[in-house]
Amino acid sequence: MSGRGLEPSRGAALLLTALFALSAEAAAGPTQLGRVFERRHSAVVAVRVKATWRAGFVIGGRGEVVLGGRSLPERFEVRTADGALRWARRLAVHPRWPLTVARVEAWDPRPLDVGPAVRFRKEMWAMVMSVNASGQPEPFAGVFTENARRRKPTRLMSTAQLGSAILDLDGRLVGVAVTQGGRETSVIGFSTLKSFVIDAAATAPESPVGGD
Image (cartoon, rainbow, N blue to C red; front, side, top):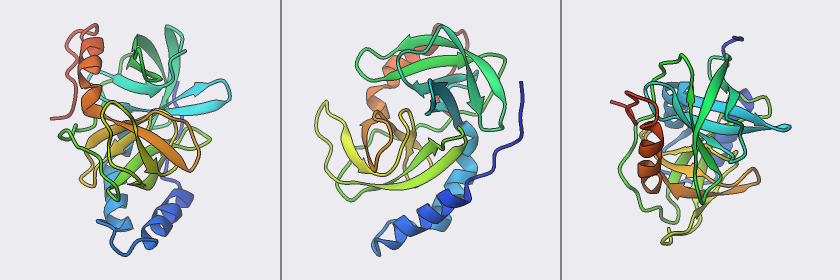
C-alpha cells in the first residue's frame, strides 16, 4: 500500500510567511521554520476519521505514533509522510484528552526529538506540524495568546488538526494540539503525556520513545 511522496504545500509556505510578517518581533522567520519543516515533516502521520483527516506524529523508533481521536478501531490505516498507507494497531487511548497511541506495523521511522518541559507563555512562537484536507503534512506558525495554566490547555493562535505536534523553533516536540480546526487551537505540553506514551509503547517490545 503505497503512494507518491508528499511535497510541502505551497499554500502552507505562503501562510507561514504571512504570519511572521505580522510580527516584527517574531523569534524566527519563515526560512528557519521552513528548514524545521524540511527536517521534521517525515514524522507527520494522518488518520482519517469519517470525512476528516486527523494529524499525528512519530514518537517511537519502531512505529509508535500519537494520533488525534479516541474512537479509532483496534486496527486501522494511517497515511505516512511518504504517501504510503500502512496498517496500525491501537495501543492505548488517553483517559482525558482525545489522543490515541498506536503502533504502525512493519515500519522503522525516525521519531521526533522530544524537547525539555516548557511552560508556554504569551507571545511565545511555535511551529504546528498539521495535515491538510488530503492528509498531507502542512506547517503553520503559531503564537501563544496566554500563559500556561496548571492542568489546563494553553491557547495557540494557529490552525491545527487534532493531534498535531507542536514544535519549538529548534524542531523539538514540546506540545500536542487537543482541539480540531479553527483559527485557534488548545495545546497541552508533551511532558504531561510522556509517561502515558511510554507506558503504552511498552506493550510493543523494544520501542524506545523519542529521538536520539
